[in-house]
Image 1: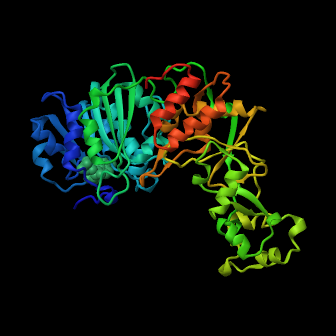
Image 2: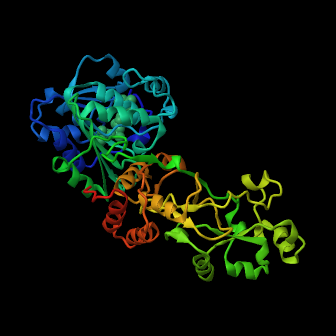
Image 3: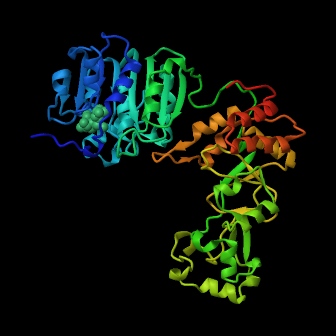
Length: 491
Ligand SMILES: C[S@@+](CC[C@H](N)C(=O)[O-])C[C@H]1O[C@@H](n2cnc3c(N)ncnc32)[C@H](O)[C@@H]1O
């Protein structure tokens, strides 16, 4: 009887056009010995045979006991757990290619769960139950590679940001002469969100540890990159720590970054001017806020900018009645509204635990605002309006030192330079649905060049950011690099 794979959901097969490009990216002639660690009825083996690799030089493994056409084309080892098998085999390979299962280790049945959780990087701790099976496959596959060996794997988008694979992200690139990660903004498989990246590691033990991340639109873009890897340079900076810029500071060493006020029920608490009028609420029971990424698409937010948003009927009022307004009839009725009639969802976690329930705890007046989800990168919108605050769709920043407006603009300009933008891009998570997001903790670790004293930093920052917002990234970088790095950055 066939051993039912615990991983039915992972049976997503690589399109042959992608399999062919992945094989070609690491193929160095017919004498290489190949491993496909989770072959299923997939096409990698077929592509290898098409390339002229003999049956004897291809080993393929699968948990599934049902034979497929692949069994005629390669030495297929069936009904075994690759992770267990890889521990015991003495075989070593010149190339590993595949599309490993993307299944959380915790959800595997025993004994697969235990075998996967035990996998560890050389000298490191076991990856544990919180990791994913693909990571265990990647580690074990790298181990089975000979000196000078190559690997090409399809991976999920989580490979770029998941905490469980952070040790591997740093260590694996160091083991190879060159590693390329090609990230597609759209999924590579029909009807499946995961599977958006292709990892290519070449020349194990060959020194250098060069790394390059590529971001492309779709499968066609991935294939184009796979066929042109050697025409593109890579840098010796897998974790984005070093790219030749000497005087760099972590963003977190000069600003504190947090989230805006968490209302618990934005529909009730965050209002437009027409809603305020409709409910007859007096201005004194509201405070001005910014609540959307688009509100901070500017270098600074002044009173007149905020009034423009108000006139455009954006949601820029936060309902926050002070004790002196609690007797106002409109405030009394607004507070008493039933949930079904536009009233507050009092059972919401954040609302039900605070006293009084209608007071949203707000950060102290921010020095600036940042959106973590613009797709354009990160910039600081400096707060030049008294009392203005933000809700938690935005991050709020506070400079740790008392800086002049010009000094704040100089730091903000520094965040627009090429080295800072690169770090930001690397730290940005691109989710399977294409959403791009950077978390406050990651932002705090971004390194930016310390800016020199700049007399015209305010106007330079405005100009540079306007270029970025107008879609001219090169123009933006040129202004920021010229001013902050004092020389053109050729990246
Ligand atoms: C995502 S499919 C990949 C198939 C093929 N590599 C491709 O890309 O077209 C995953 C395959 O992994 C196999 N598999 C899952 N867990 C496994 C394990 N622990 N050891 C070996 N094979 C496994 C499944 O049976 C399935 O055939």
